[in-house]
Image (tube, rainbow, N blue to C red; front, side):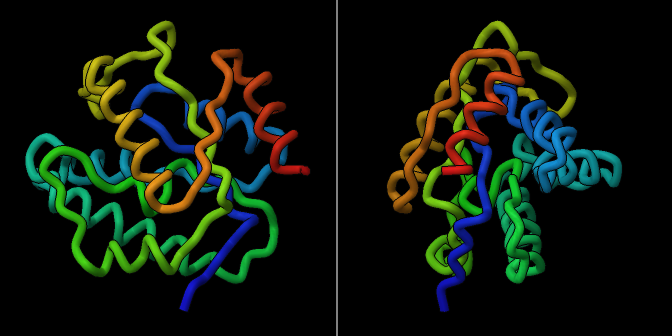
Length: 178
């Protein structure tokens, strides 16, 4: 059974492109938002001495974040309000990750709005930290991979302007309110 949620909007893209900042801004404006699982999983794994982090075991990391993203989607399947997600089920992957059949199935059966918002890589705002270890060059590669993945899954990536967070928020809201 396919669960299509046109009221579920994804913010996706490479690391350090402003997704979380935009999500926090949308939340402050009264929008319903769901934080990404990826950073939380990294924090929990590091704190517990686990290996399900992208730089140690990308397969375990990808499967854990995918299972959690699927659980979030399923738990919210009855929500009719507009919801913005910082990443989603198709965002699992990366070097060394092979999607298991259950994840491929989830990509087909759990559908977000066809318009997916993608802030492009922007060197002026990119910073590395304890959880974001990728270089800017790796961010560029991730960006292209994400665009390719979402297009292959039938989504339409919408590139956000290289602009301040308020301008980006107005851009996103103008599109979702059509």
